[in-house]
Amino acid sequence: MSQTPDDLTITYNEGGIDIVKELDKVVLSKGAWTTILYRYQDWDRGKEEYSGDKYSIRRYQKRSGEYMQKSKFNISSKAQAQAIVEALQGWMKA
Image (cartoon, rainbow, N blue to C red; front, side, top):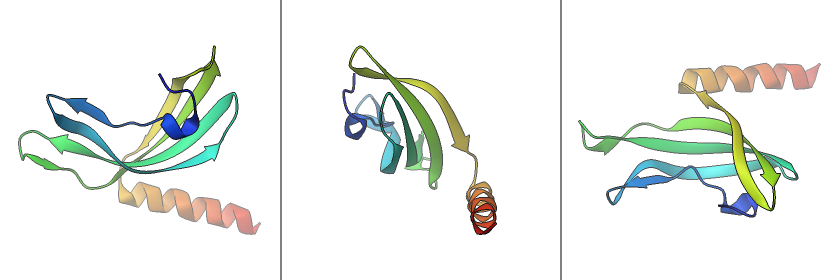
């Protein structure tokens, strides 16, 4: 288990292959509830290659000194990610 936000990862290894490969992360908030935005790729067994970039926002709760994932939102495409960015930028200007 992870004791700090920097220790948290979505990398998942199975049989010596990273099935989920974390490329980058940004810690959006720290504390008893921590929010992290990840950039990652999935391994495609059929094609034997990694997918394009994907994104996930995950919330963790710290209990008894350990972080436990409580929720997640996977951004399904670059188009959806761009739409989220544009919506947030529009709201920030208001």
